[in-house]
Image (cartoon, rainbow, N blue to C red):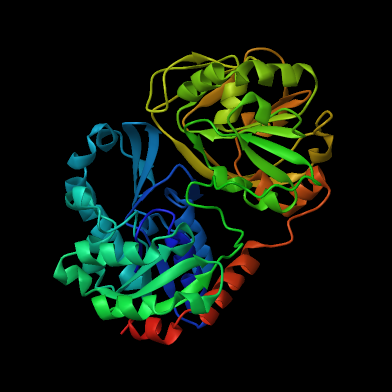
Length: 462
């Protein structure tokens, strides 16, 4: 099991790297994260799971499965979230306070874990946050409770680029009770930049204090995978076309823009000046469409987006972004109540309690400029949505079956995944991402093989 001293320590990255490394050694491995909190999700058979576990399954060479992330918590507001259990939203649990959920969730988690253990030789578990959050110990389902249930040894990872990594490792170890300390097989330092020799004698001193060896130091990797919330600040590249993705408070599925960073200057926009001059502006998915529409109005972006459309500059809405482009969204559900839209497309959306989750392959119809290059191209993506949208006036369908609409520079589609298809990126931007997911997985495996004590890790499998 991979646990971390904090969020952003590198748990998901290390788990993905180890999944591919074990797979390349011929080991039948599958990922598992008991409870994940993220608005980045992917569609698999049976519903949705966190994007990180979806990618870990691909790295492990196995089909993604709802059991690999049996509980997914999707934040909708400061004190409101949707609880997805085995791929499906649970409305009753979503209404319960946080501390009232574990009793209902643990049996589901344990059953999913046991099922995967029966089908695979190795289960590679990922923790959440830190196992030493002592204020949350009674509700923590994703760290040491899972490790004990699985009989797993734990690798504890820290982000050394932040500073304080040795204190984080020691403090986490010190706050754990003795039986949980005994599960820790090793420490890993992640995101190291600099001269390796400067670390001495800290790893040795840490081992003297804890009895736990440091199993390796991973360098800073430009890994090409999305971060857990898909919103790490991309590197600027001023010599390429610019794409401004509006990051409202409950923006979702931002991970789908990661590959686009290889060919475009992608920026997260939260203010009017950050969309000015962009070649393309994108309204991404949203976990709470009405609240995010209100945020657009407060930030001044509503007027700026309308002016952009009037001036004929490209504006793309994806899923919740499509809904925002319309005249209104309505009906009280977990996804939000009623609100007026941007009014850029003659569409209305009604939310429904049930959620649609499915993978979809279709083809763009002939489109006007500036979208004409997409005309006739096949697109494969996924739908995760509550809303049903219909036209209130004649409008061209960009995708059949009500999956997309277009009016001049304004395009709205329900499918996530457009920018994860190299050919469609090439059509829109003139070049395709050079690094495939498979190449990224292999590069990560090679990094852990080079920088970690894989013999020690493998011996902990028993």
